[in-house]
Image: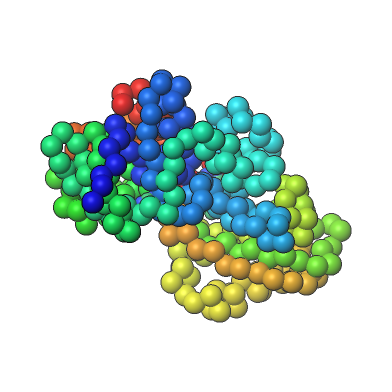
Length: 284
Ligand SMILES: Cc1cc2nc3c(=O)[nH]c(=O)nc-3n(C[C@H](O)[C@H](O)[C@H](O)COP(=O)(O)OP(=O)(O)OC[C@H]3O[C@@H](n4cnc5c(N)ncnc54)[C@H](O)[C@@H]3O)c2cc1C
């Protein structure tokens, strides 16, 4: 079996992993990113319907660094024409990313780290960086008997339930709004799908109903929409999306952790994806 050798491997092609790889590139350091899904972006996710975009992950990013990449500014943060995923595509340009590679096994091996993916591909690297949401990264470490012995990270994430819909007959006065703590975002406002509506259910709602079936959740959302500015619109199609780890409820005091020699954790649990990646790039 062949083993691919790399100096640095980053697990995850979300904003942290991509920005970290770009920072390393600026420092003339190469790396390989292994990403379990078929696309880039992670929680910066744009769903294509009728060839037009709807953001079902972060609709805005709070970091100012995003301004360098041709964003639009709004009162909440920065967003991107064509969907937030355009940011990931921009960041992913000219990087060495291997998609559909879910890392399952990690073990210390000599002066580095051996990895194996779900499909049996093998890798070795001197430095390994995990960028998944912290609970997922810790679970992966625990499955590989690599849990930190005495470090209590204790960072929890909020859950998020997102309702995506394509509407007909949208009332002229329906605007993007916060409504009873459920955030409504009309994609027409964002130059995305002109009939796209995204409802990000409140944190309380998402926590309470996360394990319910889609049918049960939809029956709970219907009265919310019935009282919203979109009540008169008709729904052409819809989808529900659930994020078990949406945003950290607190952040760790330093921008990354070296949890074992040459094995690092970074990402949004350690500040913003951008600042965490930049700080780590300095020491790799
Ligand atoms: C609904 C929602 C709303 C949000 N709203 C905002 C907002 O308004 N403002 C804001 O600033 N932020 C917001 N966020 C948070 C923001 O999206 C994240 O902070 C940011 O995208 C995190 O990027 P990341 O690269 O650190 O992690 P991720 O995007 O989670 O990237 C990690 C990557 O690792 C991959 N991965 C995981 N495990 C493995 C494995 N074993 N092998 C290979 N690959 C693996 C994943 O597929 C993923 O692509 C929101 C998030 C959600 C879900």
